[in-house]
Image (tube, rainbow, N blue to C red; front, side, top):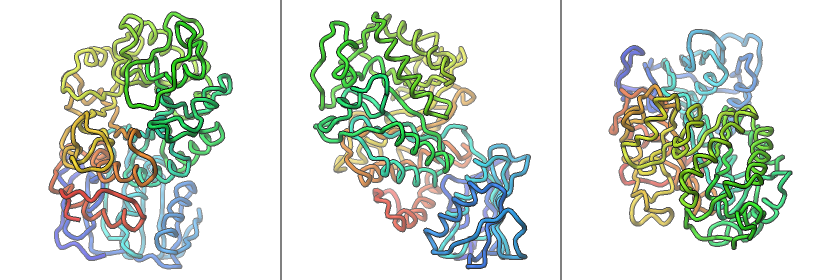
Length: 495
């Protein structure tokens, strides 16, 4: 890798934008501090990965092997002098890591395995061929939660497609994957106590335009959870309710108030379905679903939806949330829902996902004042299913057109009046599947905009600089190309 001619220093106490001309600090998300040294490390067949955290070491070895053909041994013992990549757990770095690269060694130090893994993702970005650019990076995340959302309900995406997506989002230090598993058009997760949910709601012909049937068995879901966890990504399952439930009601008419099954829906309309709020069958169903999901989800959150429940009267909506949110806690999880759940006092101990396009939401601000935390996903900034421009062949436009700069130019910590940064758990980029059919479509709509959202979630607010970001994004593009990622070549970036 060419050595940088411009020295860029960003102090931990007062970070500044990371600007580099030749690659060392061309990292996404931008690190807190990056100081190039001009002493590159060169991988060869004598290089050893030395660590007592084999989950991280083995994943790094697999990535290096896939990208260079080198099969590096992973060992807990002292490596021979010189050719080693050392991955160490040590105190004092919080959620972050320190990376030091010189001619003879690479050392990544972190307090947690997750921090160590984040450091290795930076290391991989610094690699060009078999050279790793020399210097020191000290880094830590701005927000705890850095999420990506994928809709499996409007169109089912296979486990292999989801795994490929996980492989890419982890490169950007995304640590949560939110899977939207039910909607009006389909039901995508096996529930033993209610088998017709997937027999009917996951059958061929479900999904938008009748395309995209399928579902995850519990074994497939568990495999996805494990695959993600090995890459330090936590799965968040979502069952949307009390609206967006037409597929469930087709399978089980007793979930309607009149006991009559509605017709299946394959269109994209929203807001017309509702569970029967006064029926005890509804709460038996909801509890069974939450209990079975919680049992197979090691992560802390169960997402209970709650958006666009236009067919549910407001008083019934609050009554529903007041009964359902405690059920999530009953099974050891934290309730998480779209921002509409803030209407319910029971939700004050929950997490609300703000998808609104306004800079003001007094109801949500009031809930925050009572202890609610927020994940920021404003639709006009962070919905990756919106078209880039009018000519984009995929996507929708109801939240506007979202080019890369639009996705980048906002601050999650100051976005909503009455929601201070201290109440912001993090950010999430949502990708809905009304127009998506395969992994190429997913990648085209997600990248490069997900890189922008990832930077907002990880990097210090003081490093927020569009020109610096677009330069680093241009340098990152060849990595996507090398891995076969079908990203959108935005004209805003000089690729």
